[in-house]
Image (cartoon, rainbow, N blue to C red):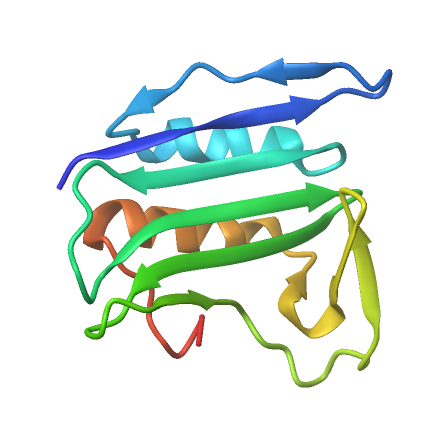
Length: 134
């Protein structure tokens, strides 16, 4: 299964820097990008080259000020688009702003290690456990 990894980072001055796309990234590539974006903002994506029905095809990360929002996109068996996110029931039931949009705080994590682990799992298996992202 071939994966493409890329995105953009917005620096402290508000300038957008496009990341070079990486085909089938190694774990070090993934960790390097994800740990460098943590205190900044931007969007990072990993996408399967070939989409198949009933399987995830894209993992997206939206970041702002150490707020990490992960979204796993897939088509179900009926062809409907489904997005899976993390859910932390211990978080407050409020909204958090990430890149100008409001998202449930329960879908946001502050742990870059969890984010790295999820990207690495997706790169290796093409999926993420439903215990982590439902």
